[in-house]
Length: 152
Image 1: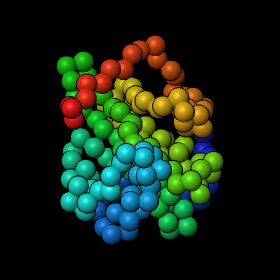
Image 2: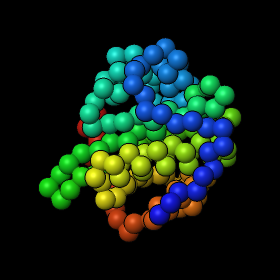
Image 3: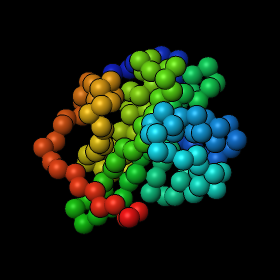
Image 4: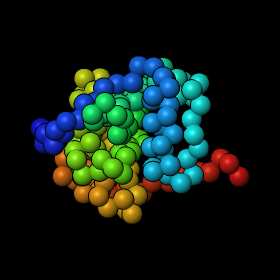
C-alpha cells in the first residue's frame, strides 16, 4: 500500500554517525517520548547507529532535527522481522508530516531488507500517533504483549 506524501519540507535520512548535533537533538527528543528516558551518551548513540540490527532515521526540517525513529530488523526461523521503536517528533513539528515521513522511510527500508511485515506498539494515550499509524496503513492486531521486568 503506498503511503501518503505528507512530508512537505521534511527530509529523512539514516543516521550514520553520532555527531554533536544528533546527540543534542536526541537529548531534546527523548524526554518528549518518555519521562523515564535518560540522556544517551555519544558512545551509546554510536553503538545504536553502528548496530547492524538497527537503523536510526532522523527527520530534519529547515536543517533542524525534528524527529527520529529506530527500526530494528532481525531474522528468526519464520523470516525477517521488522519493528519500529522509539518514534518521537518534536512538539513544535507535530502535525506537519514528520511522523509519516519517518514511518515511510522505515517501511521502505524494511521492505528492501525482505521483511514481510512491520510491527510497532504505541500506548493508547498517544492518540495522535495512533491515528497516524492507522491512517498510513497499520492495522491493530488482536494480541497480548507481555513484559518481564529485569530491573527488579
